[in-house]
Length: 79
Image 1 (cartoon, rainbow, N blue to C red):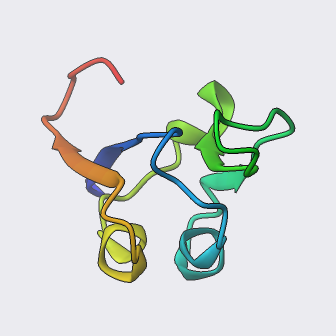
Image 2: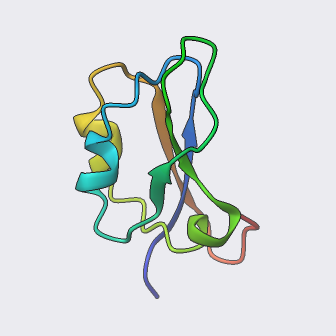
Image 3: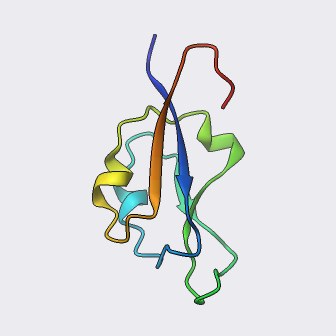
């Protein structure tokens, strides 16, 4: 069975560079339509898309602000 993951983004630290969106092979992330406290439009993972996460860690690796965490889910564990 394929790996499943969970992505958490600290929206207040995200400056909206969108590098994580471009690096995600599963197309889990998208740009938020609401600005954060600094006025940037951060990346987000929607409830619908988060189920597609494969825990590859690409988003974490390219994030210059270290505001993304990726967790690998155990088989049968709720997202």
